[in-house]
Image 1 (cartoon, rainbow over the protein chains, first blue to last red):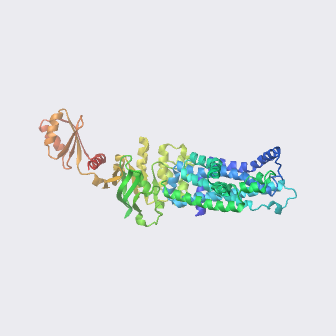
Image 2 (spheres, rainbow over the protein chains, first blue to last red):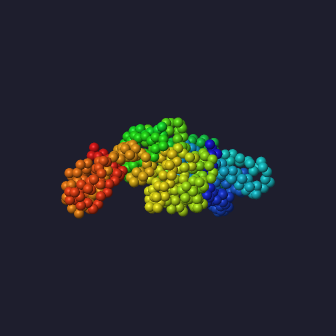
Image 3 (cartoon, each protein chain N blue to C red):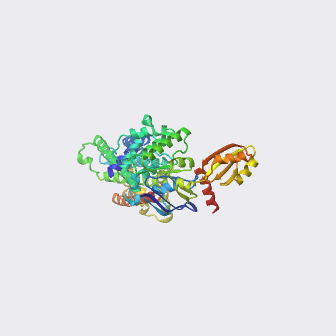
Length: 271
Length: 299
């Protein structure tokens, strides 16, 4: 069934120019973002926060490329997931798929499997790029030194999986591409930081404010300069970021809730 | 064999009752017209029985439950508008339907010939005219040789040529012995194509049965004369004529089936009533529909 549903999704979107464009943006922007790294390097040095080491070298490349991927996956692949559902809703092909014979469960699974494939493909691409750039920018490179930060790979996958399932939830809930994309971007960029701020100010001020759904996923691949810059101590870093294990656990919990909610919403509502 | 049984189906949107305990059944081989004015609940009914809308109460059964929830694989249907991927061509869109239906058919030439689209099969769906879109939708309903085909307002928005084309295709499909359910607000369409009819209004069932049974045996007479006053007096006294309606240029009367128009004409001439217009015809579904909906409103 998995292959059948994936093949069906591929048939629907293989000739879609928006999907092709978003995929190309993802493919180009992930490696290109490394060159923005040079900009960050200059910036940090100019404000007297010198970087300890070259961010393009292994094993730091995993963190740096992971953080770049954090945004690139969130933006391009997240919007792609939203588009695959909302285009089906706006062209009424969602209802036609059901009328033709797909069950609601199969329709949802087709999208869910696509999210899985995208998360795995993005992780594979991240892995290849990190290896390639690490190899080119590390002195006395060896396979061991390249793979020193190998847990970044499952973290990158989990982060991608979490973002894309969140995108899927909003797509199924709103069904209109403009609204879903707007809420998706706004929640992540503005919404959650504001909620975090309000909780800190009016309810509690401890690390639990970092347990919000997108924040935990973001902390799987955080901004590496925080750890690299000499201006930050261990205490400051701990206050700003969750430990990886905690972030991973919370991401699994939130993503499970998001998956169940998405299916429930789709199964209960009129199409 | 009942292929569809609808029992007390209701659908409420807040206080609005889109369907109100609707019940009817469709038997194998019937061409059932679901007839009602716009907003009567036809599409809602089809939406529920095709699984895209959730009913508030009531139930429905397809194929006496023999396909255990996979009944839609045995139904070909269009609901409201033809819904396809706009950037894909006819073959690609039909292939998606084929994949969902899980059938092996890879060549759609015969289907595209039936709906006269084989020459435009490589054009993107978005480049099609409304008539072409509708014809592609009809082709899509036939993939996998389904036992039942459902059409919702199949000629909506088409020009006269398109309407004639689609009707001919529907008749061709019906002649293949398939069970057809067709929702329409166009009485003429239902009368010309369907063997059975279910009439609904405001979500309620008004009447269901064979088109011949819904149409009673009375005939309609159109009669005109240069002397309308004398003609009216003559018609009022003539045996077998029931209702007389003055349409200005002529009278329209309901008469018993046994009434002979030639005999009526002869009698009128003998009584000095010169008839200049005389048409005798079976009552149309349109007239029955208006009568049924009127009496339902009075009740």
